Length: 100
Ligand SMILES: [Zn+2]
Image 1 (cartoon, rainbow, N blue to C red):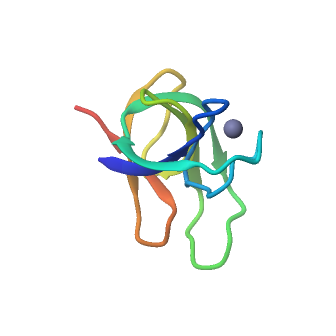
Image 2: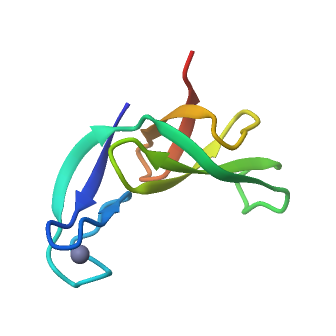
């Protein structure tokens, strides 16, 4: 899936969800659509969840092949190093998808 990220030309920071200003050097960031494909860096299972969610929720940090990292939730068990895809949902959060 494609994701909107912001890139900083000055320090090469990549952020998803995108931000207007770079948190590192305060410069304006450039918006770019990149592939959501990447690798699980770390993951956890959340047992105490906000209202409206059903526990447990699996959450993973995905290092995108395009650069940058995205925190996303998952409907399936995650493993470190697993290759996944990430989709952006309408509420601006991200969900991890399997790659077959
Ligand atoms: Zn920067």
